[in-house]
Amino acid sequence: VQLVESGGGLVQAGGSLRLACVASGRTFSYYAMGWFRQAPAKEREFVATIHWSGRATDYADSVKGRFTISRDNAKNTVYLQMNSLKPEDTAVYYCAKSMYSSVIQREYDYWGQGTQVTVSS
Image (tube, rainbow, N blue to C red; front, side, top):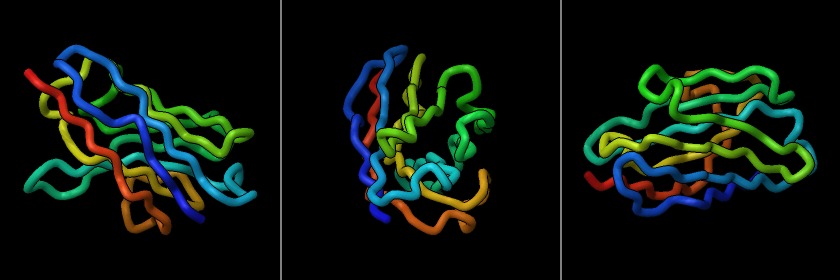
């Protein structure tokens, strides 16, 4: 399985970005998917996760109400819509695959290379 993120960039505070993560392989619809992020000098942290069916999602408290995770199994793609961005959202964002929706990083076995999101004040 290969995961490739895109959609990062530089945006002003209050703006929006949509990240995408495309997965290789035919079994994408069997996996839960997650988004994590790592800010400079900080540990990587959970952002959002989505059940393989797309029917269940979970978010970190810091992004609830601002970020939305979704997936299109026909396109092998998971998205992260980020609205009302804040400077503290600046980080490298990673998508990852897991057998089960989880907030725990070690339960994800494949990771993308990451995409940089920078929010200016």
